[in-house]
Length: 213
Image (cartoon, rainbow, N blue to C red; front, top):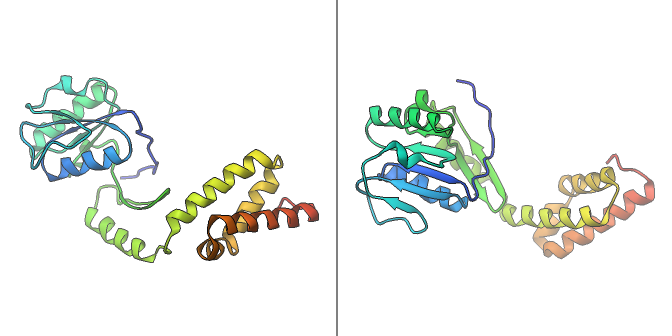
């Protein structure tokens, strides 16, 4: 199965999770972390009601999908999951059915996260175990503090967008910053040192008249 990788913005949008087992509860927590509005539907839960989610303690009904942007079918009943998938598509929502690739519009990758840095590893639903193993390998290889570094770069980019009108020059400075000593500068001196290095590169490239990098 061929897939197209995306990062999905679910902030403020309704995500419906059907199934109160460990898989469903993990989906609920990750969706809440992504600032989605979450509705959990299950007669029983393996634990307490998740804080921040709307919990409906009832057997599944198609009306539970009203207003949904995305749907997760996480029950232990394959036929029910397939029915949920059909109902979700009829309602115009994307659907993911646990361990049933044929009923999925999208797959949830294994994700390594540090601040704004997200690295997603997917196998098109063919081997979640492999994706999880690769996730662990990548997580251990990431530089220390890369999330904070990425946030500092985002803040710096915002400042340069407000002060440097030459788009090519601005992009060239940011690229050189990342490719050269930006990370080590940030680790040793924090965001202030990173900003000073950017100003230095800006002056150098501005003086040379080069926006090409």
